Amino acid sequence: MQFALMIYETPEQFSKRRNGPDDPYIAAWRSYFTAMVEAGIHVGGDPLEVPETATTVRLQDGHRRLQDGPFADTKEQLAGFIILELPSIDVALDWAARCPAAAGGAVEARPLSPESKQRITT
Amino acid sequence: MSSDGRNEIDRTIERVARESYGRLIAYLSAHTRDLASAEDALSEALVAALNTWQRDGVPHSPEAWLLTVARRSLFNVMRHKKVVAANESALLTLNESRFDPDGSSPFPDERLKLLFVCAHPAIDPAMHTPLMLQAVLGLDAARIAPAFLVSPSTMSQRLVRAKTKINYGGIPFRVPEERELPERLNTVLEGIYAAYGIGWDDLMGIDHRGKDLAEEALWLARVLLALMPEEPEVRGLLALMLHCEARRKARRDSDGRYVPLSEQDPQLWSQAHLQEAEQHLTAAAKALRPGRFQLEAAIQSVHAERAHSGQTEWPAIVFFYEQLLRISPTLGTRTGHAAAVAEASGPAAALQLLDAIEPKAVTTYQPYWAVRAHLLQRLGKAEDAQHAFERAIGLSEDPAVRNFLLEKLR
Image (cartoon, rainbow over all chains, first blue to last red; front, side, top):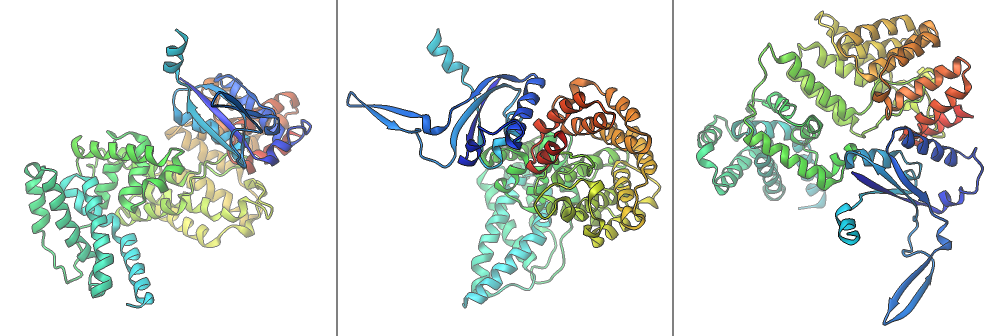
């Protein structure tokens, strides 16, 4: 079954993104990605731009309400997602714990919902 | 009552609960096989104790008092569950068992049976350790769950399921017979070791899954040793954990950086732990029945010798690993063996040992990649070493270990 790891980073972790390949955080991420790909479990995923680039849209009484910034105003912000093909949530949590963002930030693991997808795609 | 007196009673209850919890649960459940009801009954008794003792003072024998109240509560619970018919004789035995509530005469210690029940082969092996922690030490699901990387509610459900199996699955409350004892004892020892959460101590940046339950694991091992003082493997396990425990302070430098075993300052090793470990290992050896845990403790004992001799006897470590491979050829043992061979005979021989391991078995096994990376580096194969380091880093959970390996990569 497939799981999504949702990566939440702190402002400090976001700020390391522009650093070069020798930055330990960047290097740890590269190794983490390699380990997932070579374990044959990586399905997809991508990092997101920094939260300052986000715009949140709501429709209230037929009017667009735009919020300059991300949906939730929290210290850790959604920074990216990874889709993995794994036998169980236990294994997904192992991979979540290995994620470089988990030390300081947070990683949420959740199964994808193929049933819901089927209901809206067929 | 003054707040001092209240605190005093809280502390007494806490102490009695800590010391007697497993003994009371074991005694109550050995007669009914109903672990969950025994736990409910004892927690009711503990609440009652909090109220009554504050009013009337602590009874002469707190443990006996708790047993009397818990037994009454258990009787009510089981009557409520309408399971009395099936358990009637058991409950009568429990009710009639001779003991003087005002005296200090102890009831039989059934904890050994309880430990064997928790680690019964019919129970999911992943639940052996959580069951022991809960039944013998009274840890709740919320405390146990993080160590096993599951949510408290999931752990709670799994514990309930396991207890239902104990209750209805025909798992006997007894100490295994002699012919099945070695194997059954081994599952109990494995369960305790899993709570400790550390494999062999490392040389090269091995990721330990620190479970934060070391104290509890040592406690369980001491309980087991008190119940089975003649079993050398119990002493072996205790010695192994004490050796690991002795190095606790030496594993990180003042900046929190990871320090591999070979670079640890022996002055920082706890002499008290090391001495106790050696005493158990010596006592175990007298039985002339070596086993997995004695051999693993012996390996750590050779490492500890460096505190006196200033060097490590690698051929002795290789020898113990070879013995270990015969009885327990796990991935951990094979990787540790290769790491020791690298020191005794050079990296090329060690790499051959790693190459003999099925590649599929090691895709997510961090220690293999950490050792492999160091061997390739020593052999001057920079590109292959870099790749292996990346695998090891990507599989590391402990940020200190990850940083240690990242520095080697540069």
